[in-house]
Image 1: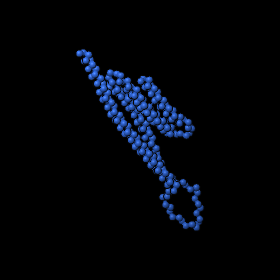
Image 2: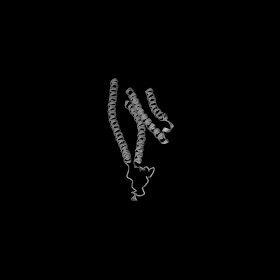
Image 3: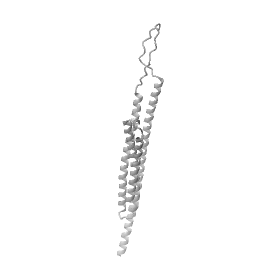
Image 4: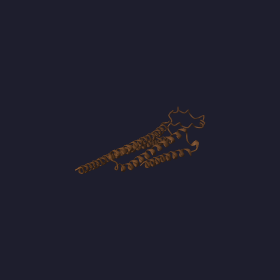
Length: 229
């Protein structure tokens, strides 16, 4: 069991290290002028989120592997239920650590999406400055005086197209973020249901184990009483 836990821990560290190395390599191979300090910081945050998610998954796998390796040995002990309860407690502690890491990963990812959506919205709201003409055409002497020009400049079709594209991109980013939040909420709800079902199954199993244990004790006491006669 100890060797299995050690192997699980090594695998977990290897998975996390692989994610970190891949993310850092992806940012390091770019030319120095290809990333601004802000982009580099965001890339580091994305790498951290991926590493946290990978570490959480590795911890979950380690918790299940350790539990599955521990429980069979409990039936060879006198206090079977106590041994199983201790194994469940250790598994729950490891799963809670994994949940904390996964929650931090989701927080970082959500913050990045919100920044992207906010920047897209700010760009869409930024006023467009029309290009100034290079030179004014010569006015013929006989041309009558032009009426006072309207200070309002009608937006060019190209500017309207760009604005529409930015607004569409902003809406798409917000829709995607909302969809992913809904998916994450659904996944968490499914995990809660699975945890509740697993807890109920464990409770049933514990009751059955306790009944078997009590039956063994009764048989043992009956045998001892029979020997005394």
